[in-house]
Image (cartoon, rainbow, N blue to C red):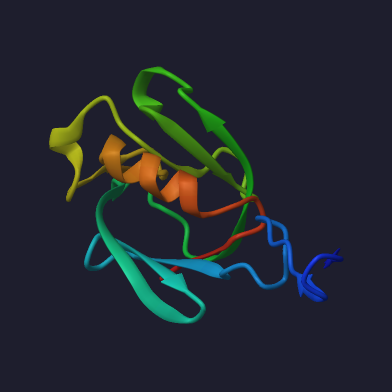
Length: 131
């Protein structure tokens, strides 16, 4: 909090680490192939995704985003959000025709425009539930 001496008022300074900032969480529904972003416990956005194929399924469970990378390149598209399950993450794609299908090695693929938007909203520590 900062004190404003000119108007005898308090000015709160919020940043992305502030407790007053919006709290996001993610639910990935493998059956519907949708990633739903929740803001303060309410549905905020929903995105179509690709999931793991039969031989390399997307693992169900509760995870957290532990790292983020811009422009990782190749099959990871425009953004990478790594989960605390080694080798798995949410990322863009260089094959947009794969969205809506079960074709990945277990990661969650998104259209690049959607991955860029999601990347800008969520931080490291965001909870990701895969059901």
